[in-house]
Image (cartoon, rainbow, N blue to C red; front, side, top):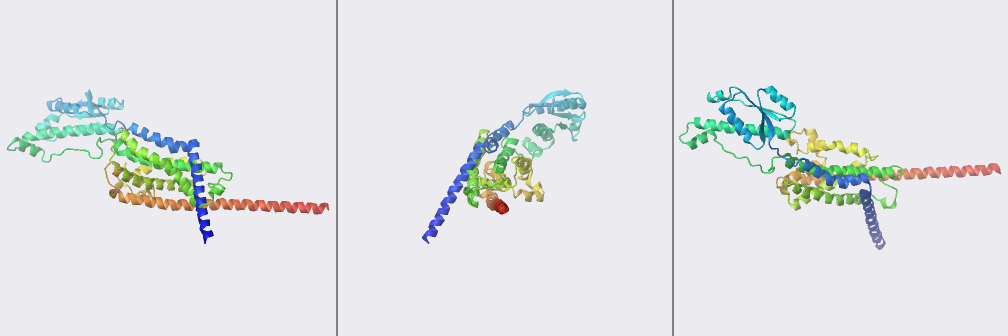
Length: 428
C-alpha cells in the first residue's frame, strides 16, 4: 500500500515537472519565434491602438453641403440660416441648379445637397406640405448622418414654429402644447458621443484576443510540425509522455500571456481613448477567465489541422469579419438567420463580445450576463475535452509511427543478419 502511494506521488511529481518543462518550452517559443511573437505580443499591443486611433474622431463637424435654393424666399433663407448654424454642417456652396451640386459632389468638394423647390414658401402659406430634398453621399456614414439629421431637426423646428400661431389656443402656452404635444429631449445613455468608436471598438477588442490566440497557437503548431523530423505535432520525448501534462503545459503558457494582454485591452485601451468603460473589475475578470480558456482550447483543437505555418493564415484570418457580424455587435442579432446563429454558438467570441459590451458599455452586473457566463464555461469545458481527444489521437499516431519505424528497423536488421549468415555459408 505504501509503495503504491509513493508511486502515485512520484507520477504526480513527474507530471508536474513535465508540464513545467512544456510550459517553459512554449514560453520560449512565444518569445523567440518571430511569427508567434508578432501574433501573441505585438498584434494585441498595437492593433487595439490602431483601430481605436482610426475611430478617434467619432463625430464630424462642418461637413460641406451645397445649397440649391429655387425659392429665394424669406422662409427658404430662414431654413438655410438655421441649417448653416448647426455645428455638424456648413453651407459651403450655393448652386443655381441640381446639376451643379451633383458635379460638386462627384468631385468630393461637398458631401451632400439641400434642394429647396420654387414653391417652398407658397406651400407653407397655403397650409400645404412643403418639401425640402436632401441628397447625401453614402460613401461615409458619418457625413450622411450629420447632413440628414441636421436637415431633419431644422425642418421639425420650423414646422413647430409655423404650427404654433395656427393652433388656435387660448394662451401662448396652449399654442405650444398643440404644436408639440409631446416634448422630448434626446440623451444618449450608453454611447454618449453617438459615434462608431464607442459602439464598435469594444467588440473588435474582444475579437482581437480570440483571433490572435488562434493565429499564435496555430503558428506554434505549424512550427512544431516543421521542426519535427516526421511532421508530428507531439515530439518523441519523455517529457511528452502523457496527455494532461501536454495540454496543461501548453494552455498555462497561453493563459499567462493573454491574461496580461486581456487586462491591457479591456482596461487600458478604452480609458486611453476615453471610450465608455463601466465594467467593474470582478465581473470583468469573471467573464475574461472562461473566455480566454475557451479561446485557448478552441485554438488548440483547431491547431491539429495546421500542417504548415502558412496554413493558419488561410484558416483564421478570413473569419474575422464573419465572427464580428454573428456577435450581433455590428448587425442586429434578431436579423441573423437561424443557421448562422447556430454557428455562432460554437465560437467563443460570440458570447465574449456580448458579455463585454453589456458589462463595459451598459454597466451590467455579472447576474445580467449569466447566459453568456455559463455559455463560456460550457465552451471551455467542451473544447478542453476536444483538445484532449485530438491530442490523444496525435500521441497515438506518433507512437504508432515509432512502433512502425522500429518494426521496419528490426525487420531490416533481421534480413541483414540472415544475408550475412547466407554469405558465410556460401563461402564455407
